[in-house]
Image (cartoon, rainbow, N blue to C red; front, side, top):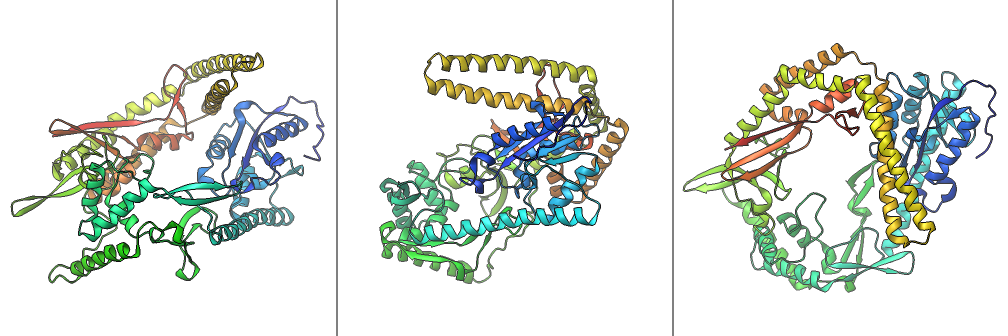
Length: 568
């Protein structure tokens, strides 16, 4: 840090906020100076020179996240929420340099800072003791160029990283995560290679044998799950086990025949945001790796000959054109439901009743993966489920009396009396937590076992950060000056919009009125369902803060409006 301006007056110190960020691409590059902790330390020293104090509640940091991924910068979003409140608690923002705030394209980053400065916020960069300014030719051009250079640095880093990955792929080293059928084995410090995992490889060979013998994706998945065969790691929140999709993925992965294809997709778009897109086939890198072959060429050919025959039969059957998939589902709850027992999709299934084919709602994991993954076999007609969900949402979301009662509770929580009570409770919790941290530190100094104490310290520090965030949110809430009538007017206008959508486009109504999926739990011969409406999120947006004091014991929570019902 350099060129800290000297304080020139004896006025009471102002309150400043600090923001620090470290990107994933900066690992090993000036790590000491670019670490989040060092940035915060230097920013506080700079704030003292500006005659500012920095309370812990107004220190925000994001670690190991690219400056282009603004949606993932959670602390940055909290900072912006606080700075754009009608009565913000700070008027000064300090960062190391403009690249910490954003690495988006220059015009976008400049506009973001300009909007903050227009609200009267002083923005300082301690790296070169510069204050962000705008409104004249030199400032506008200078800062726009600086921020475009920040974006260009991000683009160059992406280019260098891709070149390094090409070298790794060419040398046969791992460039991604784990792949089913293989173990990742580290060679030295920098390189990782794959070695065949025989128990998993046996499952892969079985899939190819079953396919060659005429077994379809769904039957293969159910058979493997019934046998409790090893399976790929599931996505977060999804049930573990084989599905028709994962079976198909294995059958079309050329790696299992000893051919590694790399560079099929591009990870980020031109703006630096994660958005995987397909690359032209001419850019693919194909390499033979006989040491990674799990299935023989004859087994591969047998399975794919059977798949080609099946595709040709489906395509050429007279009077049965291939089914095309529309972007919009004709079924109301398709994509909105979850099975509460396994976390899988609650979707539309078909059943044969003699010569009649009917459509029902049920658990997709049970239908496609079998009872081993999910034992929820209950299916119910579409009409009954649809009507029950819509009727419940109508009572919860579209009734004026319910909305007025909700608003009354929210504004009661925003009264100074309740806000101060919650802040006091939070500060007591923080004091008690600091005492626990001090005792753990003393235990380390007295020679206690290090590993368990460090683990407890990490947990307590996480709890402390959560409390500090809650206190900062409380301070922001306490500064709010909200026009209750205006909020109510906008809320009811939105609800009228939802009411019209329900008549014209029910699925669009669900997209806007739901805050997350609807969970369906089988109870006897009926489904109990529950979810959260978007009314609470809408109220938070209208009031201008992400957190509200909702209960009297000092714990802060989001404004959630749950709904539940029974579909017999």
